[in-house]
Image 1 (spheres, rainbow, N blue to C red):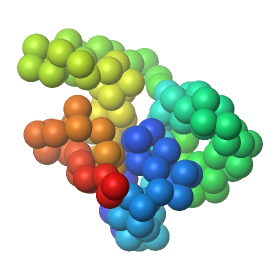
Image 2: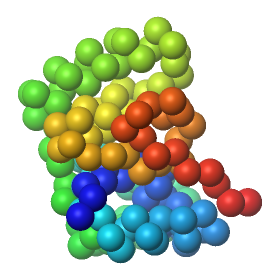
Image 3: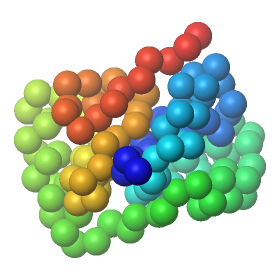
Length: 130
């Protein structure tokens, strides 16, 4: 079973039931899923902004994935990743570096719709369906 860290952008598409969410089904059904606690924060904020239920979102995330806390090891590594990536990707977020660090620690791939992950070997950047 493939280990996958699900980025907040992928969860948002899934929770909204968008056309892009269909691309996630294969990964969600066959992979061992993980979500960082920082992504959970981003997801909750986004679903609340869109008038969706944060309880339903959290229940889905918890039932389908393991939530990974940001420990010192991930935090230190993420800081280094963030520092390096900002040289070539000035808009990349610290939360993205945390996702990358967690994937590295878990020997996992990242599933995302976030174009800031373009070019990173550990990321599978999916295209949105309009």
